[in-house]
Every structure is written in C-alpha cells, then in structure tokens.
Length: 309
Image (tube, rainbow, N blue to C red):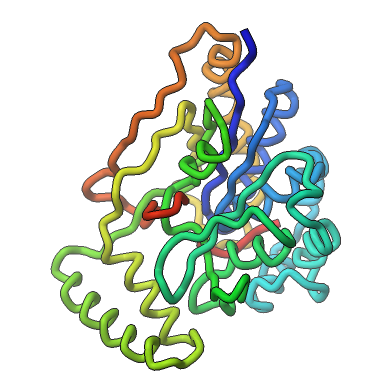
C-alpha cells in the first residue's frame, strides 16, 4: 500500500516563526516526506524557502546568526523583502525571480484581500510577491498588488492553513500552530463593527486601500466569528505561548521549542505513514468559544505578525 500524501501547514507567528525552522529540521532528520506545503504569514516565508530546496539545517544556521538589530531593521523597513537589511536580503536572494513551477515541493501562500476581506490562495506566478503579500501586516506594511487585488497578511483565516494543504492533495496534514484566535470582548463588538462599517464607506468610495482600508480590514478580523475549519491529522504546538511575537530577542528559543515539539510528535507521524495509525480524517473542528488570539478562518476559499528570518 502506498503511503499517504503528506501536507505541511505552517501558521502565523511573527518572530516566533523560527519554531517552524526547528520543526522542519526534525522532520528532515527523521526523513519525513513532505509532498505539499501551505503557509501563511511567517509560515509562508519559511515554507517557500523550504519548498525551493533550501535545507532546514541551512535555515537554522542563518537563524542562529541573526542579530536582534537585523530583525529591528526588517521591521523598520516595513517588512519589505528587498535588498537593504540582513533579513530581507537573505530571503530576497533566495526567492527573487522564482516562480511557483520552479519549486521542488508544491507550495501555496495564503494572503488576504484587504478590500473584500477574504482569504486568497496564491499558487501561480512569482513566489516573492506572494510571500510578500502573505507577511504584510496590516497598518505596518503596505498592501501588495497581485493580479489586481490588494493583499495583506494571510494569517487571519486558520491558525495554520490546513484546509489549503488538504485541497492541494494531502491525505495527512501536519499543522504547526504558533498561536490561537483573537476576538474582541463582547462589550466592544458593537463599537468595533460600527467603526468597520464607517471605514468601509471610505474604502468603497474608490480610494486606494490606505490606512483606513487596512484598519477596516483589521477590525473585521477581530469582530467576526469564523466558520469551522478542517482539523489536521497531526498538530504540532511548540511551547511559544509566552514568547512575544514581535520580540527580536527570542528567535533561538523559538527554534528550540519547535524542535522539541516536533520530536514529541514524531511517533504519531511515523505511525500514520506506516499505515498503523488511524485513517486520516476529514473531520472539522470549531474553534474554542473564547480563544486568546485571533486566528485564521476560511470562507469561500480555504485558507501577523512580523516575519522573522
């Protein structure tokens, strides 16, 4: 019997995203095959690099050499992946000029349409603009125009883009989750929804999506309860809840936490691939009623934070 096709779903997490490198490194060492990768926000940044063929060990070495001032410089550049800072230049050299069809592993980046307020799955054309869109935090980075749509960070629809990985063809999805959903307290919802509607009127007047449009989008993400999303067969949750997603000082610790969590999940993964585990499920799970942190959601299409190298 042939093994199940494996998809990897890498979630948002800002500078905690270094945990993704740790997970990838452990999966590499254990020779776990990856057939598809879907990433949102910082998960798209690392996922695209890995899909191109950059080894997890190489990413780990680069991450350990990254200094806090390099991360701060990337933040000050508004997360632009272009020559000018150590972090941005590193990914620019890897991804510039690469097209999706050039990747060794099929890859999808999830972004968000700031006008229509819905997820956008990017799988065609140039990889760099897609990743740039996926990491562009509203109100910090500029929206990225891709195929006539203005796109921002894709980490608002699922905690990790499990649905996208499944739609790509994965039988078993391994999700790496670095945070949970954020929803405003109930007393604040009416006010926030009113502000969102007011900002929508400005956006629909024909003006380009500036700060007001981005603010409206952001409000939408913290006042809207999302529908059920697909549950991964394996969910890896590195112990990064107490780490600051915007801190430039915790990259190495996040990386180690990713390795620890991945090692703990290896028996479950290996059992599934050996055919002795439960049949990969297609069940759906609702989010907790009172999540701590706003997570991604799904609408018609399946599937923040500061990106970290």
